[in-house]
Length: 392
Image 1 (cartoon, rainbow, N blue to C red):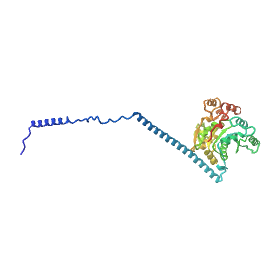
Image 2 (tube, helix red, strand yellow):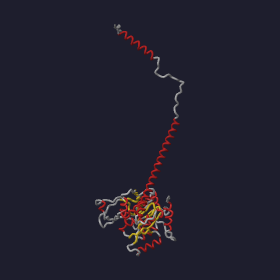
Image 3 (tube, helix red, strand yellow):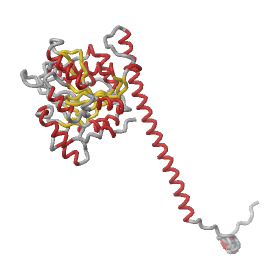
């Protein structure tokens, strides 16, 4: 049995009543929270205090960053120093093995060697007495007239700087030329004699023997080769070398890359030009022969491997060839190849004192006997400079 259906008018009335009832209810309930004047309002932070706090935190972060950078720098220095120590020990071990196996190096142990900071070998020849005198009267520490060699001995003792003219012997040992050098050495006490027959085309051999001999007498940080027609500022040289004292395998000088000269009869002709590629090629980078310095580990390397080191016609090329395949730091120092006045004079006036000065056109100071004093007076650092360099 079905109920009686509700008509549309009743439905409309029912909906209208429901709407009115809902409106009445919602008008009594607010959607906004009631005002509560007794509840405290949150305080606004003090801006000055916030700024101070931020500054403190920033300073802490910056301080920590500086501390970290300092630690990284100190660690880097320690690693580099350790690398040099390992390199030196490796060379010493190689030297010891060579001597033990019957090698002819004649090297004493480090404990019996004279300690030094640098050994400076001045390459010279029998005919160059006037050049040697010009050096003695200028950049080499003055010799006390009442005691020959007194200043050099003082320099060795106070600064660890050894300076010697490097020369071999003549083709007739004990002849007039050798006796003249003996007499000059007796007067000045400033020669290092090599077991080597002098000759321009034997310069690569002489240089190799110089380093091998020097490291068998002196335990130095650096070994320098310089020509007797080059002006040298000793104090400036020491300051440059000090910058690299903690680094291993240093090869320092004016790095160049000149042409390989294949034509016979020209100066600096390279008989083995074919090894350097096609005609017109250039040499690999190497220090110019007028002046360069090497660290102790590289001098030891030359001494150990002396019998198998190939010698090219040009000494500076030979030195560069010996190091080109090694983990060597090539230091290109342009202050080691300044020109003579006015070049070195202008640089000195600008505060850039030159380590060495010479004329490229002459591969040394042109007419050095006559001009060495002029260059020294114009471009010299002063006689007291070398004594003021602080050596640790």
